[in-house]
Amino acid sequence: MQNQNFSATVFTIRDKHISRRGAGGDDLVFLGGLVVEFILGRYSVLFYATLAFIITFITAFKYLALLPVAIVLGLLAALGWHDYTQKKRSVLGNYPLMGRFRFIFESIRPELRQYFWESDTDELPFSRNQRSMVYQRAKGMIAARPFGSILDMYSEEHNWLNHSITPSQIDEHDFYTTVGQGKLAYKISVLNISGTSFGALSPPAIQALSAGAKLGGFAHNTGEGAFSKYHEAGGGDTIWQISTGYFGCRKHDGKFDPVEFKKKSRQDQIKMIEVKLSQGAKPGHGGMLMAPKVTPEIAETRGVPAYQDCISPSHHSEFSTPNELLNFVEKLRKLSGGKPVGIKLCIGHPWEFMSIVKAMVDSGKLIDFVTVDGSEGGTGAAPVEFAMHVGCPLRDALIFVDNCLRGAGLRDRVKVAASGKIVSAYDIVRHCALGADWCNMARPFMFAIGCIQARDCSSSNCPSGVATMNPKRYRVIDVNDRANRVNNFHKNTLTALKEMLEATGLTHTNQLNRRHIVRRLSASQIKLADQIYPRVEINALIDGRPVEDPRLVAYWNRVSGASFQPIDNDRL
Image (tube, rainbow, N blue to C red):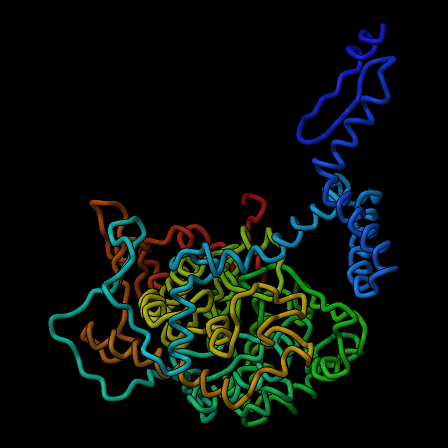
């Protein structure tokens, strides 16, 4: 009978879990299995920590030197028993103490991957080769690669710049483009710092970027967080970005304040105004800076109450149609004394940008520049789905914007900037060939001042002190040293750009076009970018001539400045 009871009790050990089933089983056998689990199984670390504590605690009565060891083991055992009894984390409950290694390794996984397992060419989002190039150029070191390229030049999507057998000679390499009209038109460098807000980046980081821009004669975009005293302290040419929250020029109810804007925008340091419609990293999505992060300093800069949630709406309150947008641009231009005013957007519905262009054609009111932000752009924090699957990538968006402006006969008057994961001189060449007049970078300039791509930007625990508002962390940034690095990176990148243009037989980036870039489509097929992307001739849309871009064909005659939506929207 005893054997029957024993055989009726079945212990299943599966996935390191013991369960008892059957009727009339022997409890001693069950307890025996549990003892095995404590001595040799998943509870063994807890068991031996407890046993060691008991032994050292008793021994400490005779050998007092063991008391600190007993205290440590006691705390460890207490932590283990807490893991064993809690119900919130299943792994810790089933593997007390030992399960904590999972969370430890998970927390340092990005660092382990970056330092040990990441390939030199894995772009996550920037590769080790790309980061090393920035670090070397920022420090004035030679950013050269020995023994040839490590790229597979026969892989699909490999692309390159066609060179000339008659290289040119370029004496200067500023490659400036004039934006706007009149005495306050601005000559902008081919490479500038993209939007970096005070609050997203630390005070010394902002000041170092602005100071570096001053040293190198290029521009620094404020981002939507307003023109702060740290931008001002750096002294660099500044592009003031006006977003949906109107930070730095808003009334108490969050509406645009023309008086405050006029006072600030007329400062000589501010060279251009940029109206942000959307952002590549999270287009169509607003944002909120949580109340604890809205310090008095940030509150004063943005014009919001301290320690209250700071909300960036998903859309502007000053306009709702293309015509109203152009009126707002005209208003900002007049208030600022005639400074260039442009827009920044990530391309989504093609008819929306086309309606802006159509409104410019019909009204004669023009924006001075368009910053095309690709969906591969970065930010401090973005919803995963938005970062991965919303918005048009930069190159496709750039082609569309360039085609649209060309077809409308506005390309010479409306300048185009490109931003979104641009890091090298070749990236600048490629995007200028596809339609950009200049390029903006944010993350590479962050690398230049010390960012290590820890991807911990939203926690205020940035290990390099760049993306944090914790003074204990950003104390390590020396403004003068990092400003020199910013200048070095800009200067050495433009030197590389100059050499590439010389190899191509050109003298300025505005001479680049889609015929200069080649892309491999397969092992046996290569094409010029001019053969891959649709072409649109100057004034083709105005003159009614055929265009290759199907989006322009489908929507140009169905959009107007009266609405961002096309006519007969119900058919879309």
